[in-house]
Amino acid sequence: MGPLARLLARRIALGLLLLLAVSVLIFAGTQILPGDVAQSILGQSATPQALANLREELGLNDPAWLRYLRWLGGVLSGDLGTALSNGQAIGPQIAQRLGNTLFLAFWAAAVAVPLAILLGLLAVRYRNRWPDRLISGVTLASISLPEFFIGYVLIFFFGVKLRWFPSVATVHDGMSLWEKLEAIALPVTVLTLVVLAHMMRMTRAAILNVMQSAYIETAELKGLSQFRVVFRHAFPNAIAPIVNVVMINLAYLVVGVVVVEVIFVYPGMGQYLVDHVAKRDVPVVQATGLIFAAVYIGLNLVADIVAIVSNPRLRHPK
Amino acid sequence: MRIPVSALIGLFFTGLFFLMAIFAPWIAPYGMAEVVGDVWEPASERFWLGTDNIGRDLLTRMIWGGRTTIFIASLATFLAFTLGALLGFTAAVVGGWVDQAMSRIVDLIMSIPTLIFALVVLSVMPVTTPVLILVMGLLDSTRVYRLSRAVAVDINVMDFVEAARLRGEGRGWIIFREILPNALSPLVAELGLRFIFAVLFLSTLSFLGLGVQPPASDWGGMVKENKEGIVFGIGAALWPAAAIAALAISVNLVADWILNRTSDLKGGRGG
Image 1: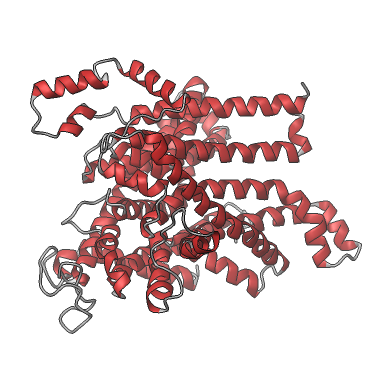
Image 2: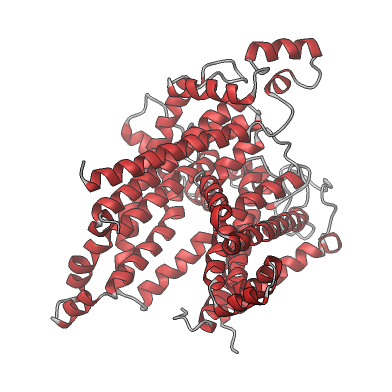
């Protein structure tokens, strides 16, 4: 096994370990209160006998670590447990919604990533002139705006006043891709605006960082055009940090999706999670929380792997 | 010292929002949960911003809502800073396995998206104001911990700290008298950003129905209450959302200025 493969294997193993620790944390997070699942199913008026029976049935009398292991074993073999609110298996319910959420996140990323990199390059090209200042100003503003502000302003003007797009994003299997895209146009715009600013700012910083190195000065002194210096000399060396930024923002996108789905009543994972937190349906919250965390950790892992592969210096740690 | 215009605007509006929050009971025209008119009345002489989804005065709700939002966000930020800075400084000064253990735990908590973790915890906890402050403060303290530990590690190796050690000062002296005063300026700049984060986070939770519970009003919750009006072309939900944005931008402008000023002081490149 070469040094690169060993480094990658170690990073992936670390990621899996982290995921395991996170599953412990999520499980522990739902065990903080003395009240238990049986109480929340039956409500406050339940008789002690009924509570005891249900506890027995659900295996709540076992110690916490045993319940954790049982839950983890179930998750690993593809059984996410049973929802308390309707008594159905969680897995099939989530599958459809996870697909919807990934569909939304994918299109947001497909719009946001190229746009952010392009704007970042533009900001560097026109550094300290009006395009750069304009982009920086808009960035500062959009970092401070909550998702629901952007979301409802867009719905108000483009959905209700101008009627260009539907204000509720409903998708189902019977729709063609084009119809689906039209339905998610507004949520994709919100998600794009939310991550664009940060991604663009970091791209700008990454390229500026490279622009200060000696070989860029050489390229400039050779008399190469500004365009060529930025795109051919600086950009390739900035790819690793940019990929890193992109991955971190995609991870953020996965979280931003929760709020955006609620705004647009989109049938995805985020909406499902929020509904079941309100219903205090602990098994569903655990399962969805774990999936969100896994996607988040996975994207961060990919970012690290890309950084290792694209940067020869990281392959030979001293 | 010249204060840039952007910082002045930020200071003005931040001050305005805080004054509004403090004096809410005296300046609000109607009672907080008082039904005074029809559902979603348009703006008029009597109701400057119109009425909300059950006929309460929107301006009154906005003023009281700002009070709730700012109060909870401030306390959460305060908790995050006290806890995060204290633990961060301790980790840097003590070092060794204490530092390792605390840093790994913080890494672990930060590897889960904050909102997801908060939702998991809130699915079993009763959603009350103290619980909200505690959850938000604890989760946010991880970020303060990272910053204050990084700053303190740098200060910890300086000569005056070494001198204090040789004098035989205890850990408490070193943390509070040597490190804290020197770590203050980066921490103050961070304070603004963390406060904005707390405001946005609380608003998001309330918007999802898992934050401040009705009939108490806060800006995120008001967006939730009035969002059904949007599809009928009634913009009541946009007011509280805009207020959140305005507060966040104002504080951001001030924080940006402080950040630039402190990096100037250190002889950094500033801007």
